[in-house]
Length: 406
Ligand SMILES: Nc1nc2c(c(=O)[nH]1)N[C@H]1C(S)=C(S)[C@@H](COP(=O)(O)O)O[C@H]1N2
Ligand SMILES: [Mo]
Image 1: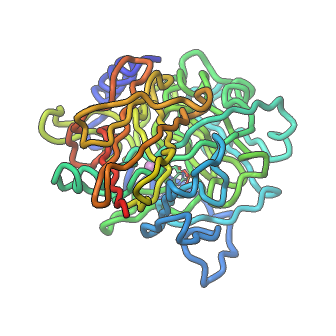
Image 2: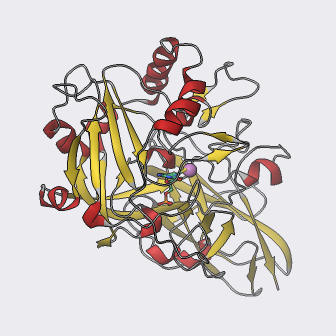
């Protein structure tokens, strides 16, 4: 599915949206959406995130934690769970897999079960279905957001991520297509609405209901996974235990964690996560904004921020580049403020991202910057400036990484 088709689809879906549906969904549905939680037992002292967040591996932002890039230096393609970023709208719930059920309901299923009689599938049943493993990247749409401010002097709303709100893992699970077809998917189904079991998201005094974002059936059938394993282990609590969606190449919010229910509809669906957030808004965008679906192209050095390097010798700099619209074709590095660029050497195939190295002998002690610029298979190189949008999504410009040489 090309990005232009996705945006066109969203335009048609918005055109059909009854006035103030978004508001109604945010209030009424949010409050009514769910029966009692099937999770309890969070230790009172625990923070929003369950796993340890040592300062040499993570930078914590409220209920979110980003990976420190230097913690991936020399590590393979997969990001170990002990450094994989976490984005929680509220907090990580502890869910008992033995009691877990996925409910499917809605007008896009044969027999159209009403909401109070959903089709259910349990954890053991899901694990008995033919599984598939994929190496896929999950990245927050706001990854790199802080550079709108620090590099471009622009004010944006949202978590001030550096470049560490991204990770690649090996996910195992059941293709969502398998479960949708078993549930009786009809040819008229157009959208699904996967919903998390974490507690409803309340912000600025408004209850937006459970975290949920519509996904076109076309994408759902293409390559989406109901994942129960991450890097060969059962999905950890912070990453969606027992079951999450993995939606390759699309923005992180698509990959709903702690999946509890999926509405399947023969008409377009809405939630604040596709009407209010995850749209590009601001000067140059239509009043209703442009939907964000795919990730863009980015690069990062496996170096501390800021890095400190010894002068008088050659260092082998390592980094990674990735793209939401295909593979990374080429990576260039500049160590002189962007005046000249040298080709970096790829160190493997593109498994979620392209790893690369480049030697650098700093010219002398003092402050320097290093820059990496990737070109995707679409032929587009990362630009010098990222187009501004008020919520700071998709920062894809070249990042100037500070290095102090001693
Ligand atoms: N139920 C639920 N799913 C969710 C979220 C959430 O808060 N609740 N956060 C989303 C966002 S914004 C991102 S970027 C990814 C992050 O996945 P991770 O925490 O496993 O890295 O999960 C998505 N799925
Ligand atoms: Mo996100």
